Amino acid sequence: MIYVKGIISFQSFSKLPKSKIYMKNKFVNMKIIEITERFSTTEEEQYVVITCSFTVSMDEDYACKSLEDYNGKVKPFLQKYIKSLIYRVEIHHLNYLRNSEMKPASRLSSY
Image (cartoon, rainbow, N blue to C red; front, side):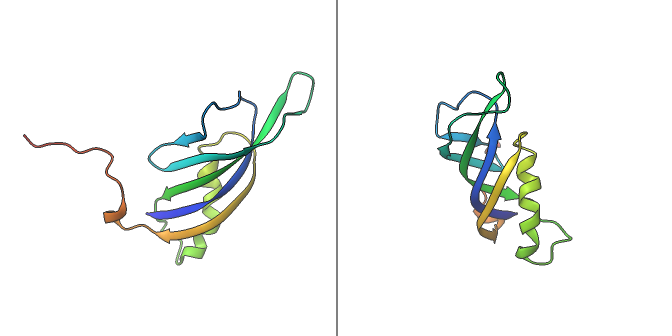
């Protein structure tokens, strides 16, 4: 697995989130840093720009020979989870994640 930490800004047409956690699942964790004021494209269509800090766990890709090769894979990976326009992705940390560092999804007992 590849561990990525950074900042993302994207457009949102939905209602403003009520908590600081924008998204949290097995692969993506996003916490809201800033929400800009509403912009309008038309009278009916308004949106905000949300900026979040994120951590991502991505599968390794055989085509990537070094960590730097994953720089171009982060935005498409995040785009699968965020269905609106992404303005920027800043990568602050990129590293290999060993299996021992991964959090178990659930533990099954063998009783």
